[in-house]
Length: 255
Image (cartoon, rainbow, N blue to C red; front, side, top):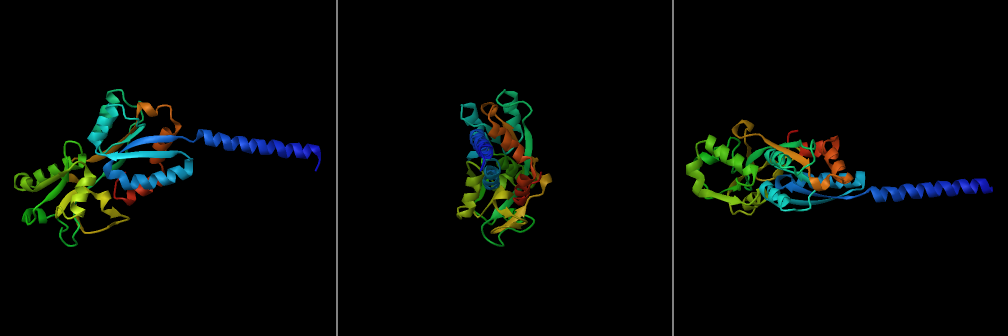
């Protein structure tokens, strides 16, 4: 091998090492706050995002109202995936987010669900019969799905009759757990918690018609702490892409 060729290989090796080092430097962590109903799809999306970009997702899940309070109290979140559109809009108005970064990443659906097969009929008539002791819902003050549940009961004229039977979870995850563990015979939960790839994964359910409650438009926004984080920007763009869309639809959300 000539000296010239040897030098060429040396330059190529150094160039390759430089690129590798550069990619390591460019990779970053992004801390995100995620509405509880979006737990399962976000975990799937995060795995693919990390593979594709090298960035790492550090996620915290909870009720939208609770996450808002944490953000206002200085939590280190850089991206917020809300269960509604009002909360991100409020943060935007308060100067807590990057202007122009807010967008709707999913439209949620409400479902009346029981862990027991055949317990809930496909029209929700089980509510009118009242042959149950407990109906689980998420706290309507902090969780949009809880608000939607109250709207459905009001639309059916059942608010007063069912109020004594209501069991409130702090978020939609706890509302689901009350039903899954048998502490409530049925409950209003997010479709994404009991649905995957076109089928209800367990028990029985009534997918509540969308016209019975206000549209659950779930918005995402880059928060001020993520303004200079390339991983935050990359995640938001990834959520708008085809890979994320496939996962989001698989869990029953509309786009």
